[in-house]
Image 1 (cartoon, each protein chain N blue to C red):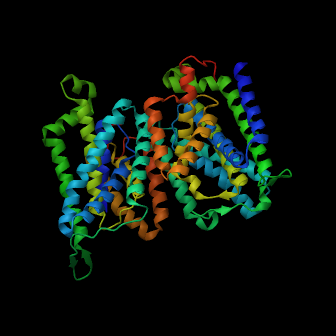
Image 2: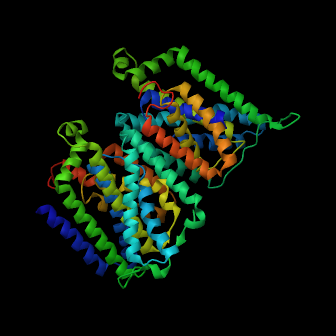
Image 3: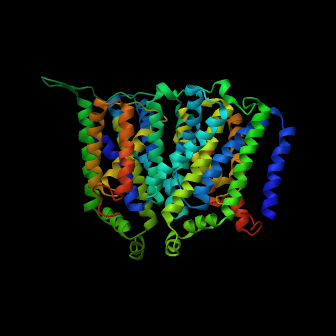
Length: 275
Length: 311
C-alpha cells in the first residue's frame, strides 16, 4: 500500500513541483487507470499477458488524456493557481461521469497475474503484493533517474526553477508542462493498475488516493520527491498501525487534521526545502 | 438608489411568484432561495474578499446538524434550534478561520478542504448520534416555528423568502459599508491594505465568520424546512456547489448567487430529465465558466459597462 501510495503521490508532487498546479483530478486519473486496466484485461484473453498489456497501455492512454486536458484547458488559463483548481475539479467530474456511463456503477475485480504465496514459517505473504512493492520501487527509481540524469529531466527542473528564463533559453515551456502533467497522470495510472488486483475498480475510487496523495505530498513538502517518498512510507505504514488501534474512520480523521495543521504551521512541509 | 430598487424589485418578484407558480416550481424555488443564501455566504468570502475556500460544506452541515440534533435529541422547537444552528455555522467558521487563515491561496483551499473532510468523517464516526450517511428525518413537532408549519408548502416558501430577503439586504448593506470596502481592498491588494493600517487577519476572520453565519443559517433552515438531515451535506460536492453558483451568477455581485443558483438548479434539473449525466453537466459548466466567463454572468455585464452600478 505504501509503495503504491508513493507512486501516486510522486505524480501529484511532480505536477505541483514543476507546474505549481494543484491537480484535483489526480484521483480521477488514478481511477481511470484502474478502470482501463479492467477493460484491457477483459479484452486480452490470457491473464498474465493482459495484465502486462494493461500495465503498458493504461499509463499511455491516461497520459494522453492528461496532455490533452493540459493543452486544451489549463494552458488557456495561464496556470493561474486558483482557476486551475476549479478547472481540475471540472475535469474530475467529467472523468467520473465518463467512467460511470461507460463502465457502470459496479465495482469490478481484476485477477492478479499470478497467485504465488510465499510461506514463511511464521506468516504467509502474498507474492503479488511483494511484486507490487518491487515494481513500484523500480518505477520510482526510473522516475528519479529520469529527473536527475536525463536531458528531459534537466529541462523540467529548469522550468521548475524559473519558467521565464527557461523560455528565454529556447525551452518549449508549453510542451514541458504538457509532458509533466501527462507523466504525473501516468504515474497515477501505473499505481492504479498495480493495485487493481488487490482492490477493485470502481468509478468513485479516485477519492481516497487523492486525499492520501495530498497528505503525502504536503507532509513531504510540495515538489520534493525525496520528502514525498519518505512521507509515503510513513503514512502507508502508520495508516496500518493507527488502524490497528482505532477504527479506520478515526484514523482518517486524525490523519486529515494532522495534515491540515502541518500545512498551517509548517507550509513548506517537513522535508521541503523552501515554501 | 438604482441598486436598492433593483434588489427590492427582485424580492417583490419572488413574492409575486409565490402566488402564480405551479407546485413543482414553487417547491424548487423555495429550495433555491435557501441554497442561494448559502452561496451568498460563499460570495462574501470568495467574491468580495478573495478567500477561495473549499470547506463551506462544513459550515452548512454545522448549521444543519446544530439545528437537527437539538430537535431530534433534546426536543427543541424550531425557532431556537434554527438560531443555534445558525450560530453553530458561525462558530465553526471562526474555529476554521483561526487556523486556516494563517495560510493563503492554494494552501487555504487545501486546508479548508481537509477540515471539511475531517468534519464529514467525524459525522460518520458518531453515526449513532448523527445517523451517519443515512441521516435522519427531522420530527414533525420540531418543524413548527411561531405557529408556522414549515413542512407545509405555503409557509415554507414565505419563510425561505424571508430568510433570503434578510440575507440579501444584509449583504447589500455589508458591501456598501466601510467594512465592505476593506473586504474588497483585501482581495485587490492585501499588502497595501496592511500598509494602510488594516489588519488583514482580523478582517478575513470577520469575513469568514459572516460567511459561516450565512452558511449555518442556510443549513439550519434547509434541514428543518425539508425535514432531512444527513452527512451527505458535509461532502466535498456541497463545498463546490456554492462556488459553482457564485462563478456562474457573478462573483462579487450581490445578486450573482441567486442567479447562479436558479440557472444551475434548472440546468441540472433539465439535464437529469434527458440523461443521467448530471456530473458531466456540473463539470462542463465549471470548465466553460473558468475558460470563457471567469466573472460570471452579472460580473461580465458589469465589466462591459452595461450595469456598472451593480454592487
